[in-house]
Length: 451
Ligand SMILES: [Zn+2]
Image (cartoon, rainbow, N blue to C red; front, side, top):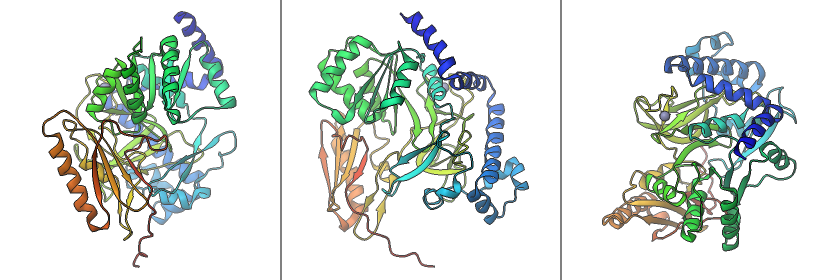
């Protein structure tokens, strides 16, 4: 069967997804480059993308001109790192001008994310980007081949034609789906049956969903099969959580970094020692608050340039996640740069009656303490009260550490709202989403800026 699957998949990929197949070979070629050559390629593609944006998007032309850059300046590769950053506000306010002439119903598809201030943010994805090949690359790193059976644990379903196309491409390869919006006993029971029948080699999903489903499945101890790899995204991934998932699935768990705005950005290799940036398809920068690049392994904000989006160029786009570079070479020998686990993804802010907003930096209270805190969730009620739920390790100091961390958050919030601590055995799912910070409070507009 597996030979049939392999041959069938390879044949169909060439026919149904020839671009993905060609792209995969290109991606493989850049893995053979030296780090210096790869850096050169990345800078060259970054500059090329900035020129494309200037030539094809009226927003960028004006934006760069307003900051004193001419078209000729963009030919200098050094210039790229002085260009102004694209922010979410730019995207919100100048959507029509950012869009290029290449955007039409066949090339562009809207991607909507929740946005950092709770307002939805729409960008256009370029459907010509070989996203499937990006996933195949990561799968190869994890020892899984594209034609092997898989399982998706997610709250979104593919429907209609897209699902049919997908099935046709993958048949006789099977992909089973667990919809985390319907997390009940019957669904788990059905999933276990499918699991044991299909024997997926590859599991992919959001960290919270995969962790919760994995734990529930392991408790039933009816899983008669372990996959080759479990891939999780929408970090942060705690080491304690990773170990727990690895036990539940009986397989290594790999972290990767994807975004609504731009598909694959980075993925771990089998060394599990940081995420390798996909330097040949994106330029991932990490910056300080003043826009300068971070030094060494200090933490900063992520900014990326997507080399494949020609319908809605994202050049030096401040996506607003946080991470740090990992210095030195990876034992796997790949030339790609590495970053630490990604923080601040898919989160709400905490908002307060005075208009004050607390953002992703509240992660810092609960992270980097895997010895004590296994998992956390912060929920803000509509009356602004904040409930912190923590799942602790068996460490004797876990509780005092947890109380100390919550005390710090309480001090930060001050008199504006109460902050309570709940020690839990399981982190609950809020509306099918697994997000570390969820707020139901209404943001109060900040006082008008002084000019
Ligand atoms: Zn590696």
